[in-house]
Image (cartoon, rainbow, N blue to C red; front, side, top):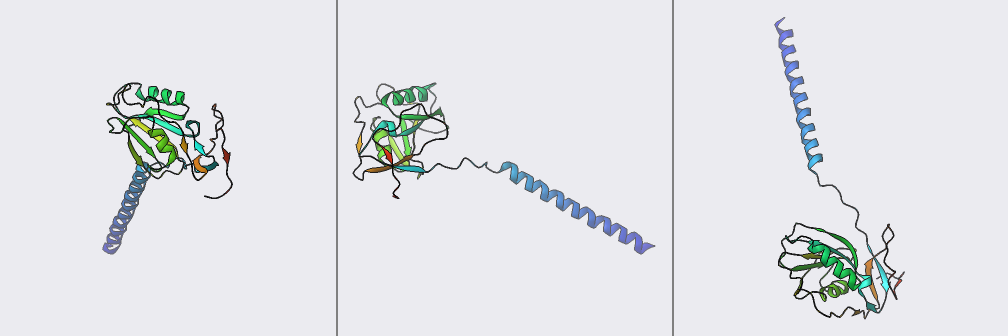
Length: 188
């Protein structure tokens, strides 16, 4: 009789340990799933266009307010839109920027250089993005009278005769097609 009671107690203990292990593993798995970063949309690759000059209409910009001035990104976006840039997004962003930060695929890329001509003394960074859009982040010290170039040169020559820019989006855009640009089928 004592052996049966002893085996009963051991089997109860083993069952309890197995169930607690499964419970603990399930909690860890659930926590890992809940706290995992949600996958974002797949980045849209750029499309190669043949053109000899880059104009604002061909450049897609996103304007973000990284400061405390209410409506600053909206006003900057409206000014860029008036200059002919394709303004995709206007929003707030948690970023510590004093005046203006321009972020694109590379600081040397023509689309980044074209946007930078619009502002006085911008910070320019590259992040390797594949869609070749340009982010403009304006901060609290952005002076709406002093931070713009009065008459910027708004074209850049493209010696290679082609450029990689954001391709067409799934939703129709009210803007006109890029003038003088034809999609290239040649690899670059």
